[in-house]
Every structure is written in C-alpha cells, then in structure tokens.
Image (cartoon, rainbow over all chains, first blue to last red; front, top):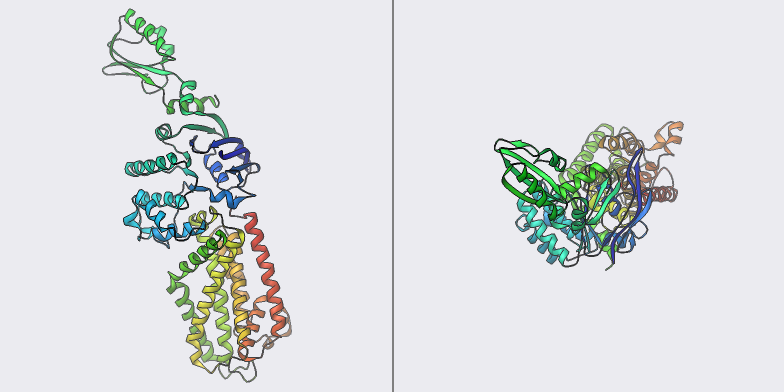
Length: 307
Length: 255
C-alpha cells in the first residue's frame, strides 16, 4: 500500500516557484529520504503533506486519504516533527504530550506517553516546564509530540539539526525500531551520512523539482563509481592519468608527498592505473579504494541539476 | 467517545488551563481595574447624576463594569492565545491534528466565555458590597453575559486569525473594542446623550449587550431586552459565520 502519494504538486509564492510539479509515491514501511539544498522545497513539500500549506495544483494522499478533502483521516495517520524548535511555554512536558494526544482523539494515553518519554530520555523532565528545557530536550519533546498517537506515517523535518550525538543516537535507535515495526518514515536532513545510513530510498529536490529518485544503493551505483586514493611518495601523477582526478579533498599535494583521488567505474580499472603508475616510476606510499558516498552523489546531482 | 469530542475537550481544556496558569494577570488584574473604576466614578458621580429612575449611580455602574470586564476579557483570551501561538509557531500543534473547524472555533470561544464569566463574577463579587443590588430577571443576566462573552470570544478569534503581529492586534483592541465598549453605556445611559449620539449608539452592538444585561438587574433598560436579544443574536451569527469561513479557508493559518 502507498503510504504517501504525491501527484503533480505545485506551489508558488508570488514569483517564486517553491514546488514545480512534484510527484512521489512512498510505500508503506519505507524509510525515505528527502534531500536537497536550502530552498529546494523540502519543507514546503512536507508542509503540503501535513496540510499546513495548500498546493496551487496537484494532490497529496496519506494512506489513500486526501489531505484536504479527507483531512481528518489523513492527519490522524500522520505524525510530523517540524523543523522549527517550537513549544508552548505554558505547559510541562507531560502536559504538552497529553494535550497533543487529546487533539488526536486519544484520552488516557499515559502508558504510551510514558513509553515514548522513556525511549527519548525525557522521563526525568516530565514535570519540567517547556521553557526550562535545553534546545536538545525541546527537540526530543517535538519528536515525542509527533509520536503520541502512534502514527503509521512519521515525517521528520531536520530532526537532528543542532542536537548532540547522544540525542541523534537515541532518536535513530527509536525511529529505526518504529520503522522495523512497520511505520513509514520520511526524513529530511542536511546530514547526508544520516540519510545514507537510515534511508532505503531517497528523492533529491532542486528548485522545487525532483532531480533524482532511487534506492540508496542504485543511486550510488548509477551516479558515481568508486575512488582510488593514491598517496605518491616524491612524485606526481603522470599527465595521462590527470583526467581521472576527482574534484574533492584529495586532489591536492601535501607535505608528505602527493595524494590523488582517481575516479574508477569498477575494480577492473584499478590494475591498469597501478601499472601506469609503476611504469612512470611513481612509488605508491599508501592506497585506498573508496566507494562513492551520498555526499559525492548529492554534489554531482546538484551541479548537473538532473540524473 | 468520538475523536470529535475528545479533540474539542482537549483544546477547551488547554485554552482554559492557559489563562488559569496566569490567573493573576488574566483574572485578578481586570477585577482590580473594575473595582478602581467603581471607586473613582462612583465616588465622583454618586448623587450627582440620575441614569435610571430609582437606581443609584453605583448600582447602575456595577452591571456595566461587570459586562465590560466580561467582554474585554473574553476578547483578550482568544485573541492573545491565537496571536501568541502564531508568532511563536506553536499553532502548528493545533493545525497538525485532525481537529475540525467547528472543534477549533467552539473550543476557543467557549474558553473565552469561561474567562469572561470568571472575571465578570470576580468583578461582581468585589463590587456588590458597595450598594444594594436587585436581580429582577436573572435569566436576562445569564443570557446576555453568555452571549456577550461568546461574541467577544469570536471577535477575538477573528482578530487573532487576521493579525500577523502584536501591533495589529493592539490596534484592533484599542481602536475598535475599547471605544465600542466605553461608548456603549457602561458608565451612562444613552438617554443622557444628545439625540445625534443616541442615534449613533444604536449602531453599536455592545450597547445592546450591556443594556440587556442591565435589564436583568433592574427590570429597566433603554430599549426592550427582546430587541437587544434579537440584535445581539444576529450579530453573533454573523461573526460566527465569518470565523468559520476564515478557518475553513485557512486564512493566515494554512498558506
């Protein structure tokens, strides 16, 4: 079953086209990443899914329920962690979670609220006013608020922005478990290593359009090969290999010799490069074959604009 | 129990708890302000003016002050809650759940009624000792207090939806609500005004709320309480329709 169906969604703010006909289908149980630079339209798309923004054209359905015409059913199935660190200063953590639970029609939900607080290390802050919490703790409460009604679809908009390593680990452990239990998770993050570690499939947005959509492994295979990183002692790269140098951190020489990152599409291309280096008299001090990561792919796609 | 009623009950509880947590500011302060009005105006004008035959000025003033407090605090409750939530961003917690337009408007307005009546009762309790009060038709007192609070709660909701910053809300409060309340007959009978201003007063819906409310105490008013009830009811229906329309459209809430 499709958890989130997005059909040709468009949204403009005066002359700015925030979303230019986005279509996506996110399946039930997926851990899906929504990536893109600032201003790509990620938060606009999430706000459209959440019903906070009304699209100019197109439609969004959550578990088959339209977010505008059938908003009650759609919103009941969705839990959203907003990007902004917002809170109501009048209430304690427990009051905040009880209220949020009640808005979703759930009374006497303390057992689950206690469990969520426990999972997010909030138990000892239960009776503390929201104003008195640190930024990281407030972020945990935001996550807990999104989960009080056990939504089958969880949307996290930059959930780890500005939070410490401990919260990240706690959060991902909990969210991964929920995903294993069948919850669909949609994540936007600027930490690409997080997306690579967590997401099965990703969509990359640029200027309000989907410019890449694939499984993580296929994307890595399709967009870029591997990098052969060689550290040459006392010599430089032969000229006929220079066209293979990747743009990145390893294309500069350093004090101990010269370090180069060379693009290779598969392992078969490694030996001819090594043979050419030996023939040129270069001495390889250190060598490493590195798989391209999501960051390489992201940069390539954002540079080209499409796949 | 259905999600409708739990969602509504929770939002009503939250809106009530919100003002109760700062009761010094939301209840005690307006009660003190009204008592100061009574002490000053009552002291200066008692025995010098005759607003309603057979009714002392202090007795005349008390229902006016009670109703003024009810109206102003009902407005303040919904408007300040909404604008604060909008500006701090926590309105998202109301917009994300499956709450219907009816649940939202009912909860905000009812919480405003609770605060308005709480303050009104407080004002009445501290001012009633200053003179002998009569209660000729208590039903009118209750009807106009509830309707007045509901109307101002709805107006507060509309103002809170419309305003995008505190300054705009303050303008709404200071240039519309405050003059309409003060010029509605809280401190005087419109019969004491020149004919032109008497006629102008009839276009002020607040006048009907206060006149009808005062009728409940003394059995006397500037116009029939039934006329006031009809006008106030229509006014409420129009405001409720506007508020529902704005919420349905998501005006200034869902972009």
